[in-house]
Image 1 (cartoon, one colour):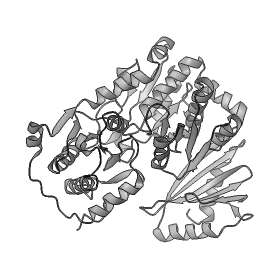
Image 2 (tube, rainbow, N blue to C red):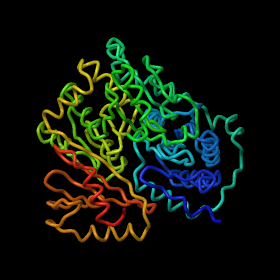
Image 3 (cartoon, rainbow, N blue to C red):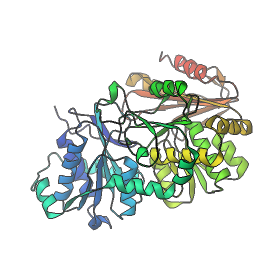
Image 4 (cartoon, rainbow, N blue to C red):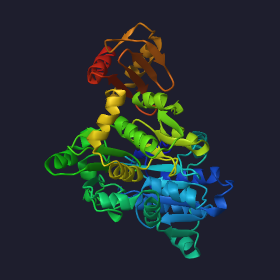
Length: 470
C-alpha cells in the first residue's frame, strides 16, 4: 500500500495514525519538504527549534526530523526533553530562529501523532507556507540520509537545548507570581498526561493529576472538554480548591473548573480573561475571535469600545493578525487563547497562571467573576456536537444549507440572518447555529449558542434530526 499520498496538513499541522501513515519515512518526507521550502528563509542560518510531546515514539520522531534538517545543512536546536507547543513557539521567536517544529498530535487520541510548524514570530505557520510544503511533498517519494544524527551532534549541527527551563523562566517574568503565592490559592492541575506536566508545579504549589508519562492517556484522549473532565470535577466537588486548570496534550489549550467543581465552557473562559485584561488590568487593543465563539464577546466589545474582528475557525487566522496588529486577546471556540505581551499563540499554561493572577488580584472567586459578567451581559449557553457520517450525507447536508433563506427554519428556529465566513451560520432571535464540515473526513460539526434560556441542546438535536443524520 502506498503510504505517501495521505500526508496532508489540516487546520493545525499534519496528524495521522502511528504506523499507518504516520511513519518514520513520512516524517522524513515532511521534514525534507519543509527544509526545501524554507532553505532561503532570511533566518535559516540561525537554525530551527524542534520539540516533542509525551506520545508514543515522539522523541524518536523528533530525532528523525532533526537528522533530516541537519542533512540539509540546517542548524537544529533539539529539546532535551518533552516540551509544550507554546514553548517551541517562544524559543522560535526569542532566539530569532527561522521556525519551529513540534512532534505532537495535540488533543487527538493516543494512536495519532503529528507535525506542527511554528513561524519565526512564535505563531501558527501561515497557511500559504503550508501549501508550499504540501506541494513540495509531491516531489518526494523517499529520503536519503547521508550522515547520521550522532555525527551531526558531534559537529554541533544538532544541539540539545533546555527549552523547558527557558519557557518556565519566561512565564515567571510575565505573571505576578508573588501575588499568586501570597493569595494562598488552592490549585489543582490536570496535565492529561501531556507535555504541560510539571510546569505549573515548578512555579507554585499545586496538586497535579496525570502528571506522568502514559502514551495511552489512560485510555482516553488528552482533550480538555467537559466529557473528559469527570475526575477533576469530582475531586473538586469533594475537596476545597479555588480553581481547576486543565491543558491538552501539547498544553496550548485550556479548560477551567470553578471552585464548586463546575466546568466553565471555553466561551466563558475567553470572556473572563477579556474582562480581567480590559477592566482590571486596563489593557486595550483589538479583540480577535473565531467564527464559532460566543456573542458575549461582541456585546463586551460594543459596550467598551474595543475593536472586534471575526475570522474563520482555526487559530492560524488569529495568529496572523496578532503578529501584525495590536491585539489584546485572540481566541477560538475550543479553548485556544492568545494574550497581548506573550505570544501570537495559544498557551494553556500561561493562561492558567493568568487565571490565578486574576483570582489573586480581584480577591473574587470564579463563580463571583462569572456572575459579574452575566449580570452585565446576560446568560449564554453554548454547545458543540460532532457527527460522523458518510461523505454522501455530508455533501447533501451542505447542499441543503446552501439553499436556506431568511425566514426558513432550522432546528425549529426561524432564520433571521445567514453568514458563510466558515461553514454556514444561521442566526435566530435568541441565538445561532453553525454547520461546518471537516475538510479531511466525513464529519460535520454543529455549534450553537442560545441566550437567557438554555435551549442549545434542543436546537442542535433538532437540526441534526432535520438533516436526517440521527
